[in-house]
Image (tube, rainbow, N blue to C red; front, side):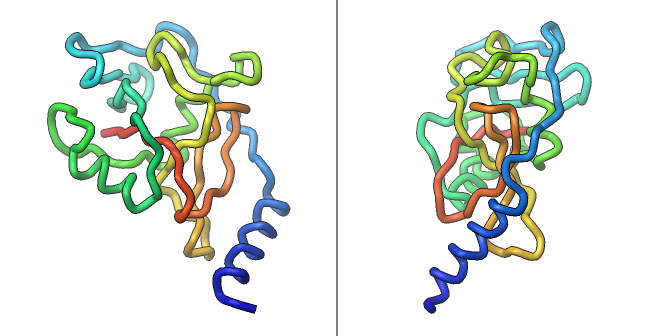
Length: 157
């Protein structure tokens, strides 16, 4: 069996074992403060966690490596430095499980036009070296995602 086939089977087994993990996070209305300015460069401050989020979602999907570059290279055009992919626990704070499925399960006022799809996190699935955790805004959960696939990006600092 080829190495890619083994990796696929390992990822498939992991998904079968873990499935989609409920996020168990809820972002109540009024928790976010949105900065003024051009829509593409607005920042959303989370008053509870103190994190600053990119408001506009990436306009395309990226592989994991390209997502890391997108945030760290400030390709998002956001003011300041220190932008990065969020850890899965940080990304879970945006998932609003009070939103009816099929979502997107996020505060649509603070984060308009968010697709109900997978978003990258920086959290690896140990010991697997090819998958990381992703936030799934279509069903308020987190799950494994192979780094060779694509997903959306929302940078944080």
